[in-house]
Amino acid sequence: MRVVLVDDEPLALRRLRAMLAKHEDVEVLAECEDAAVAIEAMRTTKPDVVFLDIQMPEVDGFQLLEALSVAPAPVLIFVTAHAEHAVRAFDADAADYLLKPFDQTRLSRALDRARTALSVDRGAAIGNDLREVLASLRGRSKYLERVAVQIGRRTIFVKSASIDWIEADGNYLHLHVGRQQYVIRSGLGILESQLDPAQFARVHRSAIVNLDRVQELRTVAPGEYRVVLTDGTDLSVSRGYRDRLPR
Image (cartoon, rainbow, N blue to C red; front, side, top):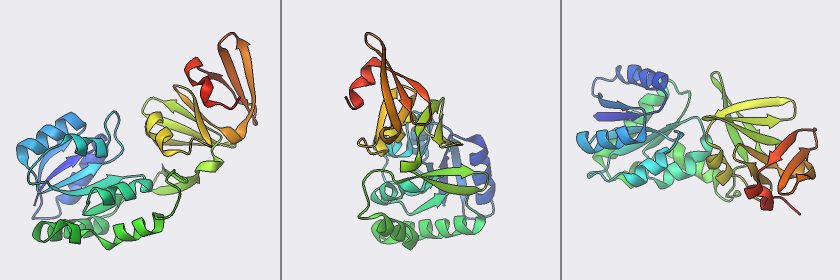
């Protein structure tokens, strides 16, 4: 089984390669840390299986697939720390979906599904675990109800409604929840597209607020505004985002 690994975190790539080394029938063809390298590697090597991280800066795993045209299409195994992507992984006909951090046993199951997918119809080879995740998510709001946060080897789920505001910091986001602060790796635009616009509003290129927490909107100068949250947090409102707040 010839595989390509795609993940923007070098440590994650090394860990996955070491785990795959325990499987004699697996040959790693390439390790890619960005979309451009991954697309070229897949077009050149035409792998049987691709382990694809979903949450990457600039171009995520789903956008990479949209830009890729390879025949025959490889079997996909999505790898991510964010459980909310399961529905889209299913729609992309993934053979499996690995939620970080995963162990050798879970990886072995994913490889078994990939082997099955390579020998039979792809659509019939989608694992039961993925179907169960999809079933549990059907009927819910199309917007994100919980945000997965990785803390060491644990993944906790923060209710979206409990988030006061979200602050961008490079490739990371800080979720402010009362006195707590959680850090996730994501772009602000990506998370914004997943949140209910009736509850959350972008007020700045680096900030999103929960509208239920907005206590006051101040005009500090013509065309210049600031928003004050119920906990006293005072944030600048960019002129282009003013219309997203209630009047």
